Image (cartoon, rainbow, N blue to C red; front, side):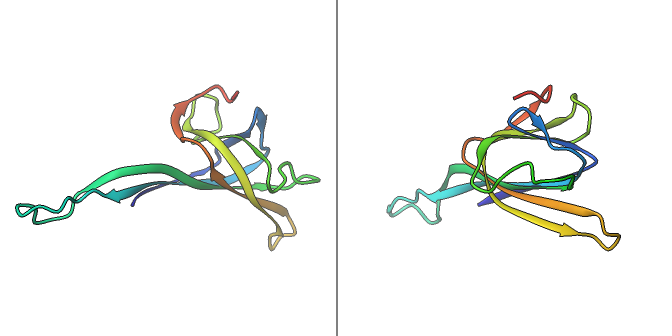
Length: 131
């Protein structure tokens, strides 16, 4: 299994076409499984592997203003941009919100962390922030 982890602070994220306000940070963990394709043969002395299904998870942490913007179980296109402008390179794919964690930091500022699991191919993209 190969893995790539990307982090963004001061970046932006969109759920469907709605900007998630006041992003603190986001992270995406992109994974591609491998499958053993070794064939039994007298001359074969090692294992061979083939790339399998791609997938991944993501988390988005933001300051919380009022109610949560995303409910657990909701599915939409998640778009993560590395910088806060619309010209930022990022990642996009359909995702399911698997968890919502509300909290308060030591200064009394409310935060929310959304957890996602991608349910489609994640593409690397430069986008306009509109899905």
